[in-house]
Image (cartoon, rainbow, N blue to C red; front, side, top):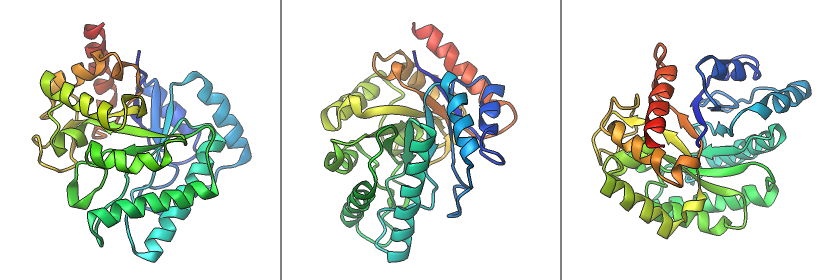
Length: 280
């Protein structure tokens, strides 16, 4: 059975995230270690680290999402250096906190060709892993919608990025909205099976470790990253039903990144649980 979770705010003391996730009935959760649009890190005391590890024992897998500012694809020396520095800093904190997954957007080819961007991401990760290799935390490449030069948008690019690091703790987090917006018709049985088959042939199903569970505000192939509540977007309930009844995907942790409005985290979790009960 999957662990069904949400993205929670990490504002204030870090230990508050457990309470926020519990309030809506989540079984797992994702959070940021710092503001997603800031380089400056939040300080975490040794006491908080110890308490965090005690508290997390009763939860499903936890995921930290890398800040949006990180761009390993860039050739701009200052941005590249800062991206590697922050990635490394956060990965070490994840290892200290016994976080299962560190998820990041591979990068955006703004000032370079897509080919050069892919090479830059690989070089950046080689630099990171030459400095620190996590033994607990698994680094996840998140697929993108292909908006504005975002890389990692299809299985071929994900395969290219993962292959050099196969001996390390790396994997993929599939974002349902991004996959659909890129052009994978995961809302139909045929499209879902084709997507799953493509993953299996290119990167291997076993490399998919988690699901970002989001409906899409935009139609198939629109290549825009716009999340919607489950069943209220263009993917619709059938797409999520297909994931939740699949023998492999139904065993993974799911993390909602749907709009933070009213009590929608709880409602979206209830929708997923209803689909899950119908599938088993």
